[in-house]
Every structure is written in C-alpha cells, then in structure tokens.
Length: 558
Image (cartoon, rainbow, N blue to C red):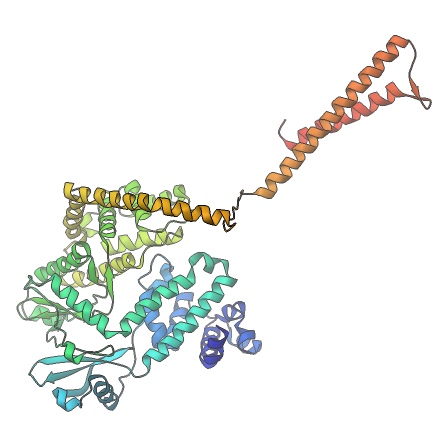
C-alpha cells in the first residue's frame, strides 16, 4: 500500500487538497494523511473556513471537482439509501457527466486499433459530430458497409488507467478510515467501496454491456411493443461497442409525444409492465431507466438503450420483494419487518422494539392515503432509510430496484398522472407468491434441501476425521468469551471475601462461646496477660458483626 501511495503521490495530494478546500480537512488529518503526504498543516487550517452549504452540497462539489471516477462512484452511491443519509443522497442524484467530447482523431485511432482495419474500410460513413458524451465514453452515428445504421460507443483514451488509480486511492482511504474511525468500521466502508468499484469496472467493459443487452432482448423476443437494439459483435470489443441505431423520441420529450398523437396512458402502462416483467419475472433488469435511455419508436414501440448498469434478483430476492410489496399494501407492520429482516443483513445488536416503532411511524405516514396515490419507489426507499438507521445492510440490487422505481414513477407521472404503479405491481407480487406456494415449487425446494443434507451427511465422516486430526495436532484453540467478565470477577471476589469474613466471625464466636462456658464452670474470670479475654472477645465479635451488616446493606442485596 505504501508503494501505491508513493506511485500516486500527486493524485493523493490533489484529493487531500480538494477535501480540505470544501471543509473536510479534519478527515485528511484524522486519516494521518498530513504526515504521509508531507503536507503543511497551515494549508488545511487556512482552507477550512466557515461554509454555509450543507454537508451533502460540499460532498457533491468534492466529487465534481475530483472528476469522472468520483462522479461515477457518486452516481452508483446515489442508489444506496440503506447506507447513505437521505440529505446526501439528494445531492448525489444531481451529479451529471458534464465533460467535453474528445477529438475525432482519437476516435478514429481507437477504432482502428481495436478493430484492426482503417475506419473507412469498416464504415461507409461516420459522423464526426458526437451524439452523446459522458465521463467514460462518447457515441457517434455511423453506417456499416452492409448498409445498417449504427451507434458506435468509444471509450475515452486513458480513462481506464485514470479510474484504476482513483479506485486504488479510494480503497486505501477506506482501509485507513476503518482502522481509525469506529463508525466506518461498523459500516464496513472498504466492502462498500469494493462493491462500487466492481460496478464501475463492469461499465468500463463494453462487452459486458453488449451481453446485458442481448439477455434483456431475449426477455422480449415475443413482445412486439418492446425493442432492444441489436449488437454487432464483429465490430465490438471491450472499449468499442457497435449497436443498432435507435431513431425515435426520448420519453422526456413529452410535448413532441403529445403532438404525435400517441396514447400516453397506454405508453405508461406498457413501460411499467416492461420494467416489472424484467424485475419480478426475469430477475434481470435495466437499472438506469431514466428518460434519456428510453425511446418511443413509430407504432408506439418502446426501446431501451444503455445497458451498462443492470440489477439481478434471485428467486428468493424476488419473493422477498413481493412479500414486502404485499405487506406495504396491507399496511402490516409485522409483515414489513419480516420482509426487511429476510431482505437485509441484520446486525446482532439490532433492537427489534425500536425497529418496530420506526416501521409503525412509517406505516402511519401512508395509512390514510389511497393506494393509487402512494409512490411505491418512495415507500420502498423510506423503508431502506429505516434499515439504514438500524444498520441493516440491504443488498445493492434491492436498492437498484427502489431507485429504478423512483425514476419510472417520475416518467409515468408526466405521461399519465392517474396511473398507480402500486396497483400495477400487485398482480406481479401475487403471481410470485402463488408460484412460491405451488406444490411443484415446494417439492423442488424440499428436494433441494434433501440434496443439501445428503451432501452434508456424506461429507460428515471426512469432516470429523479432519477435525480430530487438527485437534490431536493442537491446531484448534478454544476461546471462551463471557460478557462483562471483569465486572463478574469483581463481584465474585467481593462475595468470596464476605463469605470468608462470615466464616471467621463464626469460628471466633464458637471459640468465645467455649471460653464463656469454661469461665462459668470454673467460677472465675479468664485472664490472658492480665487482660479479660471474654470482655475483649465480645467487643471484637460485635465490631466484626457490625462490619458484616454494613457491607451487606451497602451491597443493596439484603
């Protein structure tokens, strides 16, 4: 790690200075970066002036100033309502890829290097003007020699090396934060950053995006109302992607759609059905369905583009989400909590009574609101905020569902304000629950469990043999942990001392009783070195008894 810091020292310093300039110099200092980077402390105290902006606004400015890697990470993080406070999320949602396009000469050079032929041999025409430019790449319109009109996405030169450098720095900072800040350790910050880094690296590989597009195309092969652009694999690599050009109206061009005379209610229903089909039936969905990625083609056909960000839901995840939707519709606190606990990673210290109170408050927020007016995306996001409060980790794909629903509802509200996504989700949820309790499905789960237990029984003798071998070789160490052991031992010492004192007092009393009896039988006082033994012994016994009684009263356990 030290070697990486030395190799990227300039970038580390840039990051530290930007953080300090926006009021996060304390973080730089707490991480020990002032010493590591040999930065003068006065530089940071001069920069940290009072700033009227909120923490979320300052974080957004830091991200925008640090460039493409941080912008993409911020956009990915904006889907994570389970780990990021709501006020910061709102600022992250404002992040945009405001970057200028790179030169056509670079575009031509990259295409020729990747495809192994002059650009003129591959395309009969290639427009130099950029259709869209983003932090990772840009898109041009072109025509293949065979006549097909295509969109060619080309990755920015050196962007991968830049992103890898920034990801190394982010992972290093996350590790430092976990070691030095207890809250970051509980949040498992490094694991979170690694998750974001994986998503970003997937976006850097255009072949993954191409496979995502083909997978979603198969979902709608029998639906003429949904179109997914074709991929031209012969002209695509990891950093060049050639796909069918989609010529239509973006769904955010509402006035143009209205002028064309389309039934906007039908389009809205079609869009909702398509996304729910991806999420709840197929379990593989477009996770960035903003209006710029959805086109309306002639005949009212909806086309999706840009499949760099997708979500996946397993059969169990789909069932859990369906249970959550049904619980929300029934406004059942108990069912909602069960669904959250099945969905998330629950810490041992979670306090269920407090969680129940928070979910109850959330339920009351929607209690008297008609189902048709409830935002499903907002309601799910609110639940994930409650989960965040109780440190329940929600899988990233679930948070992508909530984010996608919020984007979808924003589009639908413009197309048909009366359409209720909650109502449209109910049939999908009920279908999943019916499939879950279908005899064939139950039989399949039972057989799967039997197979698992069978494998366990088969492996058990070998595992026992390995365990005994390790035990005999002294490789297994048993550690017993007793909560509040020190307190327990102190109390045990006190009890032992009091018990010993009582025994001594009892013994002394028995001896004194014997002396008194002997004195009575001899009809004369007993003296030791001219001291009356009985009177002194009685005094000592009384003092010991008083001491014992005071100790018992002070303990509060009389």
